[in-house]
Length: 468
Image (cartoon, rainbow, N blue to C red; front, side, top):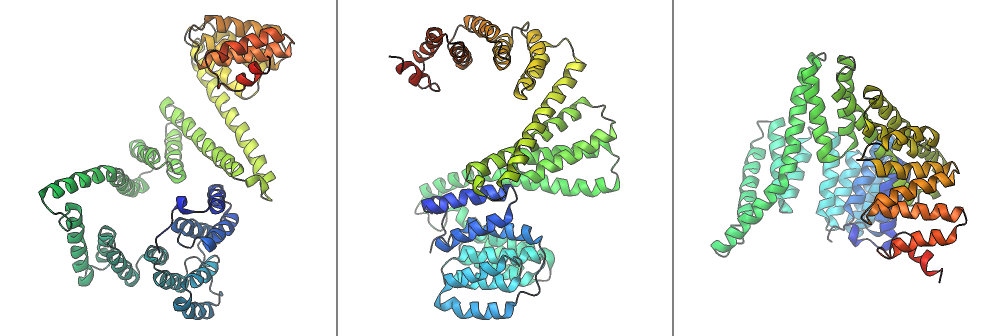
């Protein structure tokens, strides 16, 4: 039975999978577990769901072992099912792994059932879970290495056997197997097994070079992790060293740029905060970095909650609680942007670009009165003049000062030569203000001007065509 991917799922299960991912992102592990278990009943070969299920169960139990789970009876029952109905045995194993995800007996049961069902990749995953719980279990590592060899994955086999020799240099069998697996990997990469002539070999080498290029990212990540480990050992002995802290902060920043994961972002923030404290907040570059990363952290959390709601999270019992969190996070983000913009203006009060950025942040936060003064000054900067005028028009509209809004939008539109996105937005807003003032002909004229160049812009086509 081949391993399934997301594209192999039914429409129902694909919907459940998206909800599960969104729930996992917001750390709602109980809901993730119930969704992935439901998916696996219909799609037992969907390995990605098992991986998310296991991570959720580990997080939900905080990795604690359950010594009262009655495993002997479960294992016996499962063992008798392996030959008769391996898929049912897998389901039994997964159900019990919910409360004890790192249990070796249950993972061995899942492994045997997966092998019987023709799913060696899932068997390998079960063995990897056991090793995660006991990183020095060389017996299980041998089994995993042999399984990778059987699947023809010599690269992974090499890594496993090398790991065994690092734990136990006297394991001659692992040493021999690592060399054998390495030789097999080399033959595969070179294409010696399948090449019919030299042309095939050249083609295979080109493909290998392409793969190597793609794998550079992985190797770079390994190098970063290695450097972090080496520098951290030094940093523990000298935490007052600014240069050492800078190097670690930059490494975590580089890691985040590659992986876009929360742990790397938290690592970067931790070390930049530490440097900021060591330098008494005197380094503007570090202060800016901290502000940027803190905003990124907020953005990621906001995006994960929005994705969760769009995937059906509003039907969840805890939806109101998450909605409150989302509202608070958005308010926090807006305040952070305003605070940072104000600090920049205080440092450079004559910089009109910074005035514009502060005005823009105030508009986003709905602080229209405060924004007006900043945008009026920013209007004097030719680089942001038109955008400042458009935002001023928006401020006047929100304050029901419609005649002033019309003037700003009209002046801005008249200075825009090309019908680009900014001019279309300005004309559309002008048309809406005219509509509020019951000046229907002028409103329609704005919409027609957009309609002539962009039929699909918002609801312009509907507005224009319904007028005939």
